[in-house]
Length: 466
Image (cartoon, rainbow, N blue to C red; front, side):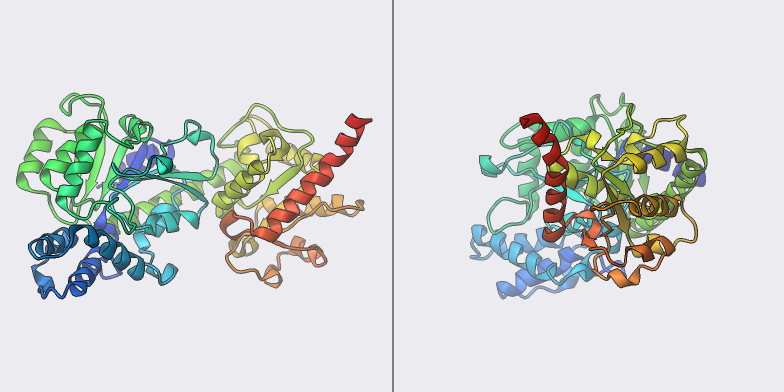
């Protein structure tokens, strides 16, 4: 892809028109060869004492090949799902060190709000939780009705929450996820026939968006089916775009088919999927940093709302360049306590285009009841940022107060209040710092926030009762 093509892709991602669809070629180590699927297949064969040369397992289709071998033996088909689940859990349960770099990078692209995964492991969800809340939606024809869910109708308004669809099920010790090609065929048939537990809402959103298929390793027939499934019109008439990033050039029959009937589908085989993701993340981050710099200089908010709450209960203060996703997660936590959106001052939502940037923010600090500065090592180390002006203004107001007002919240994984040394932070030495790793409050901070809400509302309740 040349620079112009990259710029077009980044622009569409920025506007929310692109959904990443992620496959097994992204579950690789730094060398790009040691894949999770291969290790699961080898572990499964070892469980059943099946001596197969790993070289005989086709790349990124190892599990299908291993299951096919075992189906020729006396291995119980039902037991294979439990064994595969056990292997996945064992190989992915050694901490964040096992999280593949491509998944981490994609999870950090905050313009992606919808994700589709073709693999049954929970690694992508773990990466996304480092960013904020994740709503996991599992498509599985045999999934119990009580566990069925679809894309929430208000998903676009759920700030900080990501929607993740497991198209072929999620691993568990039961026949509820795909482990071989016949399973995949059944899942495809279930979708086509609108059978059990089909997430029609999520699939409906895919019809209106361009798809970025990375490392999916679809067989020829499934590539054609998936492209047609996610298009409102026949492929030769559709206006949508797809980018297919594959480890190797697809079969010639598929390439020829796409050139003839789906000209909006671009095949990218010049880069490994992991390398493509690294380049995508680098370019998106550069674009994001540039936009945030422009917003700070012009005072224009990216997500405008009509009204600025004049007497909000909480003012969330954070560094846009470093802690946007964490701030959105804090916002969600406050709303989950029963607060209305107008009771939380959050600048990405409350600044209107054309408003004076500094004046509106400082008015919010003067009018709020509680000030929540979000502390991270990245923000603390910045040389210059408007957030430091916010913190100093809050310190000035706090000097005249005789109640709780500033509630510092550490959003890094480690709770080390002493590590934050920015000049405005030094005034908070006697305060109780809360902890919300990646923006998710721990139990102690959540109890503190609930107490502050009760204290803030008690006088109003008393006046109403009187």
